[in-house]
Image (cartoon, rainbow, N blue to C red; front, top):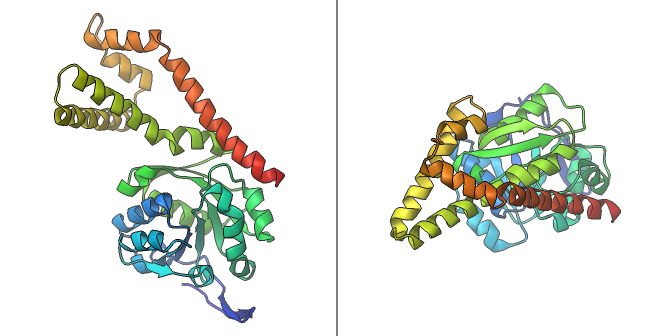
Length: 297
């Protein structure tokens, strides 16, 4: 169902795109093959997405070699061939590299009806449009690294009027590696960045602390790590399987006068909530700084 009409632009044949295409025929290009791109690519492949429809471009040959090891994807050494005819172009580069990435895909975006998705923290949709010098459709997304194992959480936002087919296409791609939510405002994406974008590292740090202290108390390292991992996985699974408020879940496993209650009291008495507040606000402020700095350039 892809409608292709060849037009010539700067000596290149441009493929015009019809969004009546199915997910099986969707071509998605990653500009940048770093950790986040590899997480998304790996998750897409694991979910059954066709490798030949996934393209990757990066200026770093080592990054491309690593990406190619994930599966039978299409590796490109120039951005033009990677983006020509792509339905979705994902800008998977660091915020400081966004301008250069936009410049490298501008020729294709001008002449074909691609949707551009940015996953760079703090980069606004208006900034992308300005860099591309085109009234293209832009989606801002904040995924997280658990997408690699199919348990990602992605926040999505667009200010553009998009067809149901286009929006469903974007949603389907990121849903293939976890769950998605569409933010009501773009400001929500900066909060999502602090919460779920950076969130996995918060849990890893807490798990690291639990295992380390268990070892100090006398448990061997292998056992401490195994129990910590399974406890975290089980607790997370309980939150997903039960439509119960998080506070109620905690209360349900906290017996009065028991060991859990003593631990919770110690956490709260020593400023756990205040520490979490400071951490999320710091991450949120950093996301806003990226946005402000880019807007002022």
